[in-house]
Image (cartoon, rainbow, N blue to C red; front, side, top):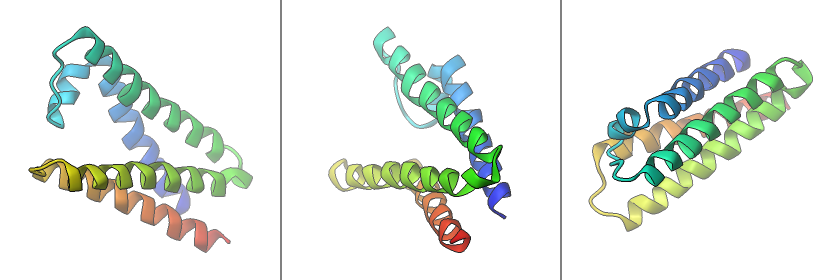
Length: 123
């Protein structure tokens, strides 16, 4: 179960990371971001692309050694938990909240929750 979950997380991070790196305007449009300047495009490539690719690589490295599986789950819980919490702050402050924002927040929160449950089960 843990390995399958982490593979799904790696695939999600990898697909979106590569997508934001190679086609930032197209992928940014999926979440309602406008790419009005080259600075915005470069920032999306770096943060949405590079960070997600880096996290996928880190999780793959963790998965190569069974002793690092809990680390992979912990990293996933913290990363997705922090992003979900930050998004929820935005949802409180930035109105109106779109249905896309709700969907993304749900995926992030559920991913963090599953990682926490799996860490607990691995204990």
